[in-house]
Length: 116
Length: 107
Image (cartoon, rainbow over all chains, first blue to last red; front, side):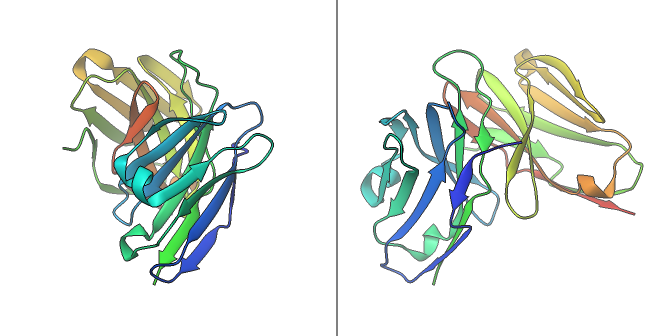
């Protein structure tokens, strides 16, 4: 069973407000991912980290999101100015992957964001 | 365009029936994983199966890389199997998900 912990489970924000969610990866997993799942079940990769460094991120994340994975603290994903289209389930996952073929991801339960 | 396609989109079974879920991908990707998503949202990894056949209880996953497809077989379905089944292919370190198969198993 996954031990990735995400908080809060639910988040309600008004348009233009900041929305921040946190993730504690499985112990010993150096790689952390954030995905967005919309109401149509479509997943969008947002950003991933290896330890504290960003590996990859999409353009939207770079412009509108703030994400970090500090050592000895939870990882976080923050939308600077929430939009209605940001309403989605935000899933955090962690992995042991550091370049080899094994890439099993373990997901948290997600933070469901509603932007009113 | 959509790189990962799953079929069927939804499936309704009577308890005890078998299910075959399909996943096809359009580009060369180097590994794949099947997930089960509970109605509440959390994802559970079922198989990491980049090639060949793997078994876990009533579940069997078969991946044929050169044909760019993978299948998930559920035998003797139970009501607790209800939920969404997602396949995901990865290109190095990013997973590309299909839109899922919503399975409903009725008693």
